[in-house]
Amino acid sequence: MKKTIPISIFPLLFLFLNHVQSQPNTIGPNCTANQSTNSCQTYVFYRAMPPSFLDLANISDLFSVSRVMISNPSNISTPTSPLLPEQSLFVPIRCSCNTINSSITLSYAGLNYTIRSGDTFYHVSTQNFQNLTTYQSVEVVNPTFEPTRLNIGDVIVFPIFCRCPNATHIQNRVNYFISYVFQQSDTLSAIASRFGSTEQSIVQINGNNINPLDTIFVPVSRLPNITQTVVEFPRPPEVTDRKSVVIGLGTGLGICGLALILVCGVWYYREGLMKKRGREFRDEEKKKMGKGFLKGEEVNLMADVSGCLDKYKVYGIDELRNATDGFDDKWVIQGSVYKGCINGEWFAIKKMKWNAYEELKILQKVNHGNLVRLEGFCIDPEEANCYLVYEYVENGSLYSRLHENKTEKLSWKTRLKIAIDVANGLQYIHEHTRPRVVHKDIKSSNILLDSNMRAKIANFGLAKSGCNAITMHIVGTQGYIAPEYLADGVISTKMDVFSFGVVLLELVSGREVVDEEGKVLWVNIGGILDGKEERKLKKLRDWMDECLVNESSAIESAMNVMVVAVACLSGDPAKRPSMVEIVYALSKSDDLFFDVSLDGLSPRQVLAR
Ligand SMILES: *[C@@H]1O[C@H](CO)[C@@H](O)[C@H](O)[C@H]1NC(C)=O
Ligand SMILES: *[C@@H]1O[C@H](CO)[C@@H](O)[C@H](O)[C@H]1NC(C)=O
Ligand SMILES: *[C@@H]1O[C@H](CO)[C@@H](O)[C@H](O)[C@H]1NC(C)=O
Ligand SMILES: *[C@@H]1O[C@H](CO)[C@@H](O)[C@H](O)[C@H]1NC(C)=O
Ligand SMILES: *[C@@H]1O[C@H](CO)[C@@H](O)[C@H](O)[C@H]1NC(C)=O
Ligand SMILES: *[C@@H]1O[C@H](CO)[C@@H](O)[C@H](O)[C@H]1NC(C)=O
Ligand SMILES: *[C@@H]1O[C@H](CO)[C@@H](O)[C@H](O)[C@H]1NC(C)=O
Ligand SMILES: *[C@@H]1O[C@H](CO)[C@@H](O)[C@H](O)[C@H]1NC(C)=O
Ligand SMILES: *[C@@H]1O[C@H](CO)[C@@H](O)[C@H](O)[C@H]1NC(C)=O
Image (tube, rainbow, N blue to C red):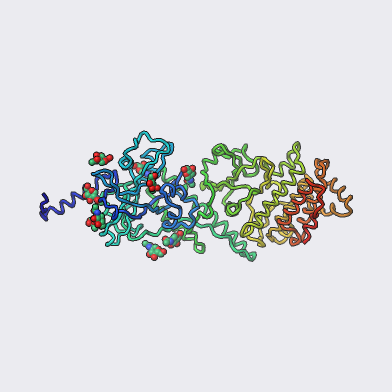
């Protein structure tokens, strides 16, 4: 049967074969059925993509691998962090040669996919798997399923196109064929240099008629290195003296702003681009951005932004505009904080300029029931605004409950619980964060009350991490600021203790911290605790909130709280108790209130050091 072919038609035959191969091959690469030689570990190149594939968990589920199996080859240090749109990933797959029937053998990695509502072969192939397979191939591989009659929960095998090198390839140092979907903006030479391959070898394997959205196989000897083009926020500067603090603050905030602009700029720019003109300029843009980052001489910004974005949802500015009717005044809660409804849930949305970084960084570290939770953020590069989105706390601020709501007065029991909640929140940031966080602006308007009247500390806008620092830029609220901070700018946890003492006075007295004549509440407060027991009780009764006077045993409990407050207000920061001691003393006071007979330690004894 077989005849020797005349040498002269060899080139023709070659051309012919080439032509056949370059016909649109919709069901995937064929292979010679030899499982033992045609099964291999290889990789696909995958792009992180909104809405569902911006975290490794979702992508690893899709490919039935663990997150680390993706993060390692993709050079991602924190597998739990969210990804940026278009971020490059290498996902490992097990490629093999599969016999469909006597005439078809296909090379693919079969991935089980459970059909969800709205899924079609076409949609899952083109969106979830980003054209690494085709719906035609899915149909061939799943002959028992009717493409138009899929049920939710059906498990479909999606054939991810791949190829395994044979002995000849390995001899030529081709150890992997990376499955890559050719993009509109791609050129063979760009792909070759990106993957450490050559144009010639790509053409040899894939033919020379490569169309956009074809899956091609890029021959490489080793998995290329990916340098993730993302930004790292700088660590807080080590604060040692005045000068470095000021410089540190300056660069810190500057870099924060820059980083946020860049990150979000990339995001928005790409979103816009993708909508407008596809992905034509992506690679060039990436390069440009990369250069921009590198220019920040002393600070290496090129690393992992995800550390900062960890846990947060990134909201679109339109989402927030819709939620607040375009930031309508009627939704203002206080200052620049708006109430907004997103997907049927209420949030508090704080609008700020590019100074959200410290707060973002600090809130990321803290997680405590007595601190307001940050849900996400949004950047609006056009107006240079930054928005922080917090959980919405129903009952407003302690300030408005104490001083503005004249009808519903808080009971002593509630006040005591609030004091303990705030103390717990402060104890947490002072003792359980590294470096310690100082809130710097503890006051009743920064204490929010939830539906159960449990308190949460809000507004970490002025907070600083790192202790015993000094600043020349005094911020805070009159009536709450510790005297040593006003005088020397010394930042320490003890300044929060002082402010907390003022809040205790507010709770006991129901008075504002600065009265109409400008007199500050905490001045001369010690006088109340002078003299004999009976005299003290009388003075306290005169001074405390009238509505509490008739509550049984409120006075004894309030007296204990006053002892704590006065200790907190000591002029010498070193003499003020720590939050740990305060929590203990207040809890004791709480016990006393409910079990007056208990004649245990007095707060004064507890506070004695
Ligand atoms: C695929 O099939 C074509 C002809 O049907 C053949 O020429 C080609 O070599 C096959 N490719 C592989 C990888 O087996
Ligand atoms: C499969 O490959 C092995 C090893 O190269 C070889 O010994 C065997 O004959 C092949 N089988 C088929 C069916 O080609
Ligand atoms: C992961 O997938 C779920 C639905 O499958 C989606 O709700 C969620 O937003 C996805 N997560 C991310 C970060 O894309
Ligand atoms: C897909 O499902 C089949 C049958 O349940 C199972 O044998 C196979 O291992 C699964 N494949 C993957 C990649 O999980
Ligand atoms: C896959 O290809 C289809 C057209 O065939 C296109 O609409 C879709 O955007 C592509 N998907 C991706 C992720 O590029
Ligand atoms: C093999 O499967 C393909 C696609 O399902 C079909 O078109 C073809 O007729 C089948 N060939 C044989 C010999 O069964
Ligand atoms: C490996 O595949 C190439 C085509 O890609 C073919 O030319 C070569 O002969 C094959 N080598 C072996 C040992 O099968
Ligand atoms: C990983 O990425 C970093 C930058 O994010 C880069 O400096 C490093 O060279 C990369 N490592 C590898 C092995 O590609
Ligand atoms: C990848 O990085 C390793 C070291 O991390 C280096 O030895 C190797 O040359 C790099 N490969 C490429 C293709 O850049």
